[in-house]
Image: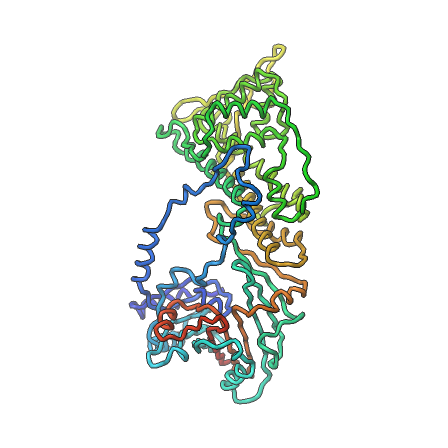
Length: 627
């Protein structure tokens, strides 16, 4: 853990014209240096014109993401055939071609003479309790591009003087890379002939979404650069662009989005209902062309007609893709699950409230055939109405949305349970999703109903209750509130937790699909799923753009998967030293340029090789003098 606050303050005061950051490492420093500090001091020259151009482009090309919810189609009927789904491209979920963040495009170098002055100045200062790294992006106008200084570094340490220099050595052909040449560079920094430690790391991008990293930490200095064998540690790195994953998962993600929108509408109405700005919740996310009469007819069939259960074809391949396709057409028997698949298409709060009342009326007046068995509130209300234990509820406020939200969460959880169980990956029964629950203080948890003592709001309006019918001169109720029962239930922190778990399950499916589609070998998917489930939950509205995941692969057959691949990036670390000094060279090769400010200069000097068998070559030399 670095502590450079005082150093940062000193540099800021001494060099007020410099652009200085005290924070996370830029992408290229993290890639090449391999240091694990959470924060460093980074000095550069900011090109604000680049940021301005980026912002203008984003403003002109930006689209309203709130309208991206895709719930089109006919209720209770999938309008896409399996063949259409198979033939639809899944290329939308890919790695960004840029290996850096957009803000890094505005980082440009300062003069190398000024960078040296800064490091010398800082190293001569005695700053108590300071420890960490300083990196300065720099350039030397006298150097050629193929032998140019990119960065100077200095580690503040009480016992050692550690300085580094990063040089860019141009573009080299893959066949030109050799351990002999790298050893020659390393030995030029030492006078004796000490033992040289060697670490090898090769990265293969086997798909736009997946990188396999092979590491050998105890290689000999005579090893080949492309040395990959059974001693290598193999780690799979992949990331999914959230909301733009596999085409088969689009409908599930849209439903999770809808649930989160419903939750936000409920919270917004509760927060503003006291000031009279909202008469009823704003709900308009569905996209069905159903008339209300058609809607009533379908609801009546769900409740009053005998469901004919079609036998499932158990001979279908249990691969994950086929199980997902199968899940979209599997027969449903639970009433509230069928209702969710229909009611999610409703596009107005008014229609939702009316159809809920219609459901209650049918349940009360007709001998319905299909009685819910779920424990959600809507199922309980229908059952009580069927048994003549309850008067027809009169819903108001967010109650229709709360009923819809609860059955939607329950239905989606069943969908993911079906996918994992039927694909034989794992059984979700009893599995804890999320290494830690989404925590939120109780004071932020909005309860749908208050006790009688707190039922009067500031507006002096009592909340409406659904009164129980009297049976044999008494009121049947297991509720502690003997005036009535709750029409619905809603606790914000519990709903947040449920939606976050659905997101975790969904992203787990996305990651498993990527692995199955790109790794043609048997893996321990139950263990991989366990690692996916153990990850910490994230609130839906705080999700990053990409979801990243990595895990170790122990089966050494994975080496055969990259036999015909050329490594996209390689890192070779050579280290040697004595009791006075330690030398470390980090040689890094990458097919893609990782420094954005070098791209234009490369094109101007026409050194870019587009043949596909060459790499950008960097050498980061760190010299540590021991006191």
